[in-house]
Length: 334
Image (cartoon, rainbow, N blue to C red; front, top):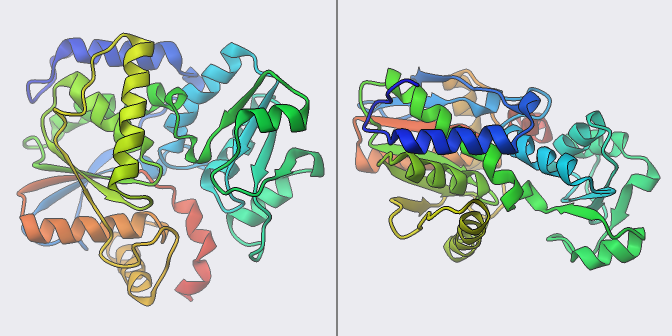
């Protein structure tokens, strides 16, 4: 095994490799590239980007990593039914419907009624669902497992929460830190800041956990696309406690060097305004990459603001959002 740069803890690398290889569906494990970018971000800072947006075309983004361990868990346990919670426009719902079908795993989608126009993700999700594959619920955050057991007359079922923000997703997501440890060797030095965004936050949490296992000490800045600091830290503590018990680890939040920031505009989850639409267009034109409006555009805008304020020499931006959700807003590009 190669000796990693930046004083990476080799024992941590072995632990990560073991977790990923043991608890993941190997056919769903893929590597994304790391490369230098120019444009959009402030001059004077060398910016590199981890391109998880290119993973798993047809699904896209860090969800591919989540599914690697989530589906492995479902297959191993042998549940009779999987319930996917989320809205019709959800990337996670659309991606999991396709993935579970390909593994011949029975599922239903539990979502509030669709009131908006059928466009983008909602159109594709609706086309793939037969009437008996959809359960309407009143709460956007989902229901207790007992509700589905009674409604579906099934006691051996597994609920995928909104955004798959649960412990079963963590082993797959740890592959991000493992890849970065290897790929950062091509960078001139350890980045002063590592940027990642957070919807449910599970991907950012797993990255922090992986970096701690590897003893990679860099400052992590997390753009909160949804929720607030209290909610993020509460879920993080819950995930860490569960992870430590399940895998006999001693991960600790207290020693993690991270900060939470918000988008500079349209801060409410899912909100869009003319300022952010302008930023979205600028990013697409300057960086020559397709991105979505409600996640990645806000993340990149927050990163640009942070870089302008802190002026690091070297920064690494994790682009973990799927650009396929851009089709929900493509009419705004005309």
